[in-house]
Amino acid sequence: MELRKIINELKSYPGILRKKFTGRFQDLVQDFFGEDAGFFDLSDYTIVFTIDGIWHRVLERDLYWGGFVSILVNVHDIYAMGARPKYAVNVVSAKDEESLEEIKRRDYGCRKEIRDKDSQGTCPSRFSSKFC
Image (cartoon, rainbow, N blue to C red; front, side, top):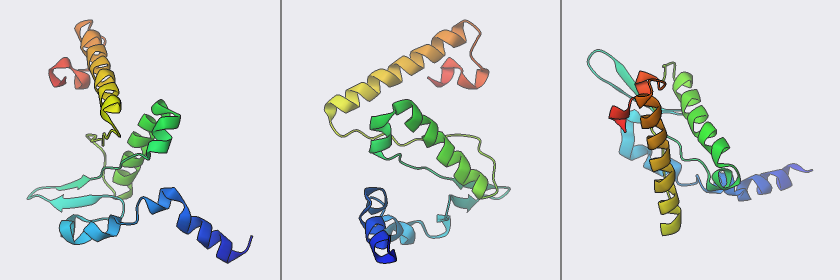
């Protein structure tokens, strides 16, 4: 395959096109902007923060894999900045009302599962029902 054809295919790939405006926000975040994660200094320590939205095509194909990847990419970004992950933040979006309701049902089910396990003494304290 010749180089020009490869370049054109890459330029038209939806996974790349969806990120075309990312760099335009750099001025808004100033010092917090990083390649893999942003950071800001507090008096005694530095906070490293990252969040990634997982491409809807991944989630539509395999929701479990999408969840795994959402953790994987964020943990990777934190380690790439030389830090250790302590907490997780995730992006949740919905294309319509029906999808939003499905997300709410799954969220409720996950929280109920955590509460049930915690009441049986089988859930690690970091997932205690006080956080649900």
